[in-house]
Length: 301
Ligand SMILES: Nc1nc2c(ncn2[C@@H]2O[C@H](COP(=O)(O)OP(=O)(O)OP(=O)(O)O)[C@@H](O)[C@H]2O)c(=O)[nH]1
Ligand SMILES: [Mg+2]
Image (cartoon, rainbow, N blue to C red):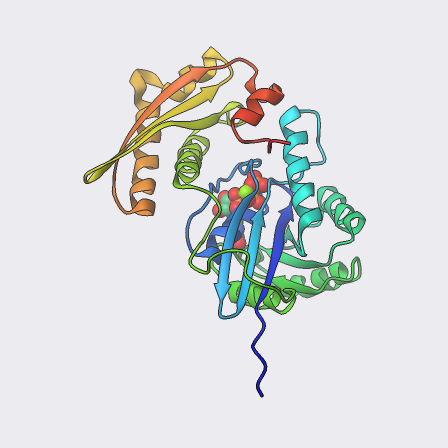
């Protein structure tokens, strides 16, 4: 008698310093844009699930905010807590660093992994940026000496090089068990969330260094009509001066942000979008626990 083949399913937390490329990897592995990616640190503010189902294996990826040793801002502390919680809940930790760099911030995260006692795969991302590939091997050897990783996978989330290698590596370590999600499902986040992410991405890419921290986006109204979806979204900032920057001279900046976000959304959702953006000042929202909770940045407890 032949045995019934077992399914495997596990939670894999993507953790790392801000800006190392966690969300890029999430989007690439899932094959759809689930969340915002920008050149600026602290882009991700939530725990976002991406589901990769291949045959009898389901890898549930958990994207997390970059862990930052600098904890003076309330929002940083909240983001760190979200990430460390996801790390502790995971079956496997996927620790992401940048090729050729291992900083104090990376060592800080490695200590958190050690403390949580979770098994980890090390991902050495952005190998496309390494001009002299012969420097990579000694770098990988040093990393291998620091922790007993399940595996070490150099890759590029940008070019997609060795992405399949990572998916295969993670699959071999999944625990046996039933699927947690429908095999067709790609994320736990509704379309509304993805709309907010695309608007925030368009904003962050076009703003200077200081404003990003102070910006949040909330979809206020969503109406599917025949042939077109109407979306009203609110952009929250902390000061009048920031409102001025977001709106721009004669409303030009806001118009460009709206256009970029709308184009992305139309591709993503496969339908026509009418997007209306409103900017509102809400002083000190990023320093308020209540506001962070209301915006979904802090998980309700
Ligand atoms: N050259 C290169 N750039 C990459 C690669 N992967 C990601 N990036 C870039 O790195 C920047 C940060 O990428 P994200 O995916 O937003 O990084 P993150 O780790 O999710 O950042 P936070 O959410 O802020 O913690 C973006 O500009 C990406 O385009 C890569 O393999 N090579
Ligand atoms: Mg991210």
